[in-house]
Length: 268
Ligand code: IPD
Ligand code: CA
Image 1 (tube, helix red, strand yellow):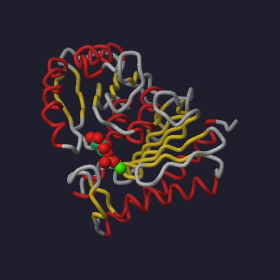
Image 2 (cartoon, rainbow, N blue to C red):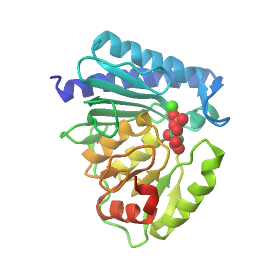
Image 3 (cartoon, rainbow, N blue to C red):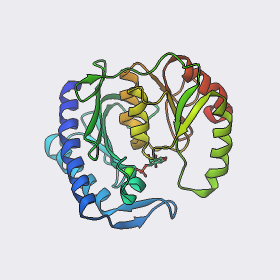
């Protein structure tokens, strides 16, 4: 059984190298390689190159582990550990030159399904700001060397909430309707454009809460552990795990209020 701390240290090392590559490619100019699920859903050459780097490093250092990344085929392993990777989360920000994107890496144990895995180590690294959010199961969440804690006391002014919108235009009207339902809880709304950073910001107390429908496993795997290790709650359906149908993250009572206001969207 690998110690979670060893997975953490390797994840940090790989995320730093991968982030430096993404940042260097950004300064050289970004080329869109293809569109994916919708015209707005793009992949750049850098997304693929950065995922290749991460995959090669994992394969070299932990050849028995599985791999689940956004830009390449999933591969099972024999060790019981899977690396869940978004090489560039916030690709549209990246393409537009907005410095809010991140390399997101989690090492999880168990079946590589969000409903059942246990995240052991997580890193969300934004190379444009130099901020490295990281966590190890049962050992806390950190921004660099500073320990993170979610906001647990609601402000009388309401919660600073973040959300996101899917690439499929058909999802936009329901997403706006959902946003309308949570507005009574909010002092204001942010749309940062990278789910991993939304989650890391909840952990850091820069946001009070976050919710989004339609996320993939690599969007939330690392950020969810960082929130939980900062004392927050992450879920999907009431009592359930975060997933495609809904991901909600917040401290304490705000989490329950978001579940209640999201109603059927938070139910399986
Ligand atoms: C996207 C970002 C965005 C979220 C989308 C994700 P990508 O990931 O996290 O904030 O709203 O649902 O797909 O495509 O930039 O890796
Ligand atoms: Ca991505």
